[in-house]
Amino acid sequence: MTKLETMIGRAESIVILGHVNPDGDCVGSSLAVYNYIKEQYDKKVLVCLEAVSEKFSYLAGFEQIQNQPGQEAADLCICLDCSNEERLGAFKVCLDGAKESICIDHHVTNEGYAAENVIDPSSSSTCQVLFTQMEDERISKAVAECLYTGIIHDTGVFRHSNTSAKTMEIAGKLMEKGIDFSTIIDDSFYKKTYLQSQILGRALLESVSFLDKQCIFTVVRKKDMEFYGVDKSDLEGIVDQLRIIEGVECAIFMYEVGIHMYKVSMRSNKKVDVSRIAAYFGGGGHVRAAGCTMSGSFYDVINNLSGHIEKQL
Image (cartoon, rainbow, N blue to C red):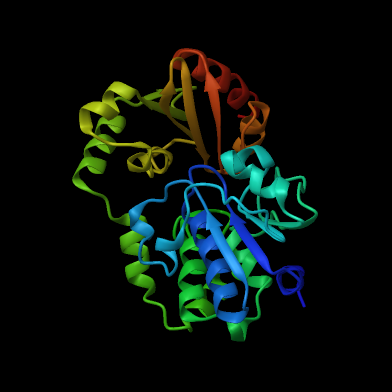
């Protein structure tokens, strides 16, 4: 039996956690475990995440997600797609109160903060790692939809360099479960609302290239978000649009979260390890996709980041 199956087997109550601002891999892995436990085990299980985008509402168990920490201490806490304890946010109390804990992740910056850890930086996503912790024949269509969702979101629909032959093999096995993979890709990855398209256009229009046009950045301020009537979930995908501009090696997108405080997302193509830069500023992520929160004016933020980028270039 795998570590995950063993720990689930000896627990009576289980809480599932992911990182703040949950993305596709976080939501997919969390609900995959939730559905797997509900289907295969007679256990009390909760999944606790911050507010999740409605575009993932097709996933089984979506309506069961709780946005507040549970009051009771669980026998087992399962942490997914979260590189460190701080990124659990308000839900860290669930980890602290649990009798046992396991972390399943693929972030290279994860040093293993749970009692048991399954961390594979060579995997494309936490959902890929999670697949290896489940018995293939026991993976239902509902669980497969969750795992496939996580994989396509962290690989950019198999376009990013973290996509391997193993990733494609696992995706193929999930497709064999009868999932509607094309609809999952269209509805959760590509589809945008009119307002999301507007703020994307504004961000691209105001983007600025630097370091001999090898890098590009843009910023969305609070006043811009209020004008368009959007929130942080509507800003997904902006940094990826910057990354695919011809000649760009490193793309930076930031949005204002407070007075002189910005949430920063970085993407790179071949030369820059953005996880190292993010980790330096207290964040984390992958070699080609990472993020952090930084203080100062957006000029200060770009100046600080550009020095680290330039060294690698």
